[in-house]
Length: 100
Image (spheres, rainbow, N blue to C red):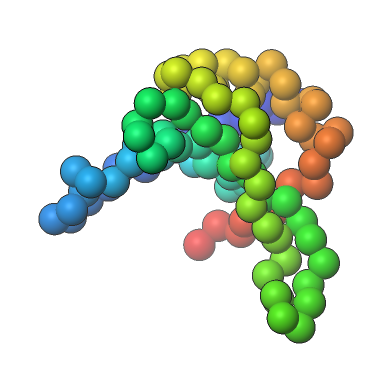
């Protein structure tokens, strides 16, 4: 089974310095989540999009979840995701965004 791949997001523009570091998480070239620094810029958190039923009130085919695991560096997140990839796919039905 292939591993997750990652793409660092480069913030641009006048207020780029105020944006938190963020890295997209992809699987087989399709985006399924991201990792970012928390509000204080101290720890890294992971968010995944998972499939859900569409309703009239909420027509989105996915919802965001945040994993409880927290890390000190982006490198730790990458290594951890590669090690627990199988468990993530067993537990969650990930939603994959189509490329634009």
